[in-house]
Image 1 (cartoon, rainbow, N blue to C red):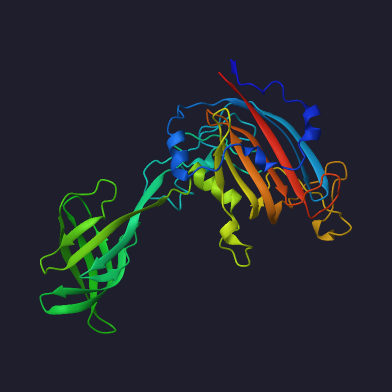
Image 2: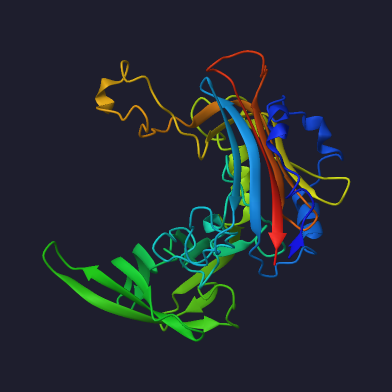
Length: 365
């Protein structure tokens, strides 16, 4: 058994220090760009590892102070997130794969083990930090802009040349696409009650794009010309996207405060680790593992409670300006998460402020 430093030395006596206000100046070096971060993380191994891990932390929120001292030491859940299981790398699940459905057998890193309070990825490495999904950036038919549904090939209404000249077709759809070309299935609406089914056979001009089969230039026997331009976007399951969403999740929402300032910043630690943080960002996040026990006199709708073992509710949404920070070691494992509302004072009891922190240690077999 190989131990990482800190696993066995995290004691509850440390908890009283966890609620001190977050000092983002400890990030060390100046912020780095995404390209710099990707380049540095390209050397971090993605070899499969399923360590035991331990979390020690504390939270001051909604007039409650809670502490955590937990070990995740059961067998790792390879296909499901098992409470208190060892680290889970993430897995593919077609049922919940709504955004990356065209990527075969992709690991959904959002299904990997998460940090205790803020759901940050427990591990980052060269494969899961940043990945791209190929998309259709634009498409034209005979020079006019059209929209192609990447999942099913639907186009809808389109104007095409045929043996009679130029006509408008409806319910157009690309079918049987392959390296050689595709068939365009559509209908000509002769009247309100009658329409004719038509097919146009398009041939690919040039080599197939191995990353996006729709990309390229195609023509048919009537010289209809389809041009599809390939584009890319960030994979919404990768670690960079998830971290940015946690730190800047309020961007774009109605009433957001100074959204241009809601930026995730990145830096390196002195010992080669990685830091992701936001300074006075307006974020809206949910806190995991925070039970809430409302006053039954104020909330009679809850019903009868067991006074000794009350059923917890969850009042765990933060919508505030905060300082937030995630720190990973040089091997890509999360070692600390922190969040404090702006102006937090640990000597003041207030429902309008929040502070949380957790530190992590790992054991590898």
